[in-house]
Image 1 (cartoon, rainbow, N blue to C red):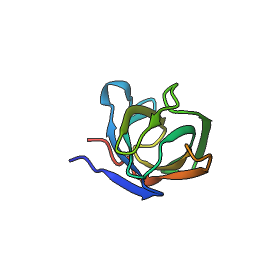
Image 2 (cartoon, helix red, strand yellow; image 1 turned 180 degrees about the vertical axis):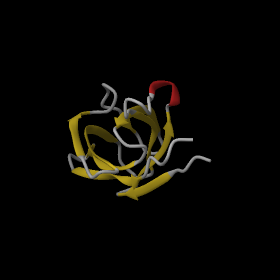
Image 3 (cartoon, rainbow, N blue to C red; image 1 turned 30 degrees about the vertical axis):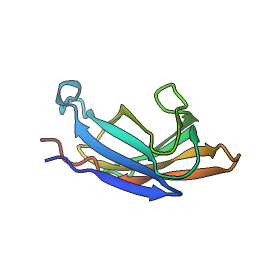
Image 4 (cartoon, rainbow, N blue to C red; image 1 turned 45 degrees about the vertical axis):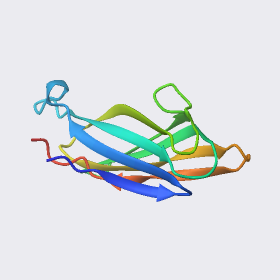
Length: 127
């Protein structure tokens, strides 16, 4: 059973669904690879662009990795009202589970820059 987490801020809905990549993982090497599909939906009245992303990834031992950079998967998508953008990415953990959260730095066509939070979600125990 897959879990989906979502959060809406300033009319921007961020939905995340993690899934385990068994073929890229190795229990003996303590490498548990999780992918996550993200959908960003613009329910606001303005056009927005994803400028940057920030992820905080914590394994089950409390080890934290932070990732900050431009756009998502090499793109800085522009979303008009009613449009959505979907992508898939992933991260390895040294434990079978952990937690992830973060935000997208967005800019509206009005010039306003704001953060659209990525909901806290839990890549769980692999199947």
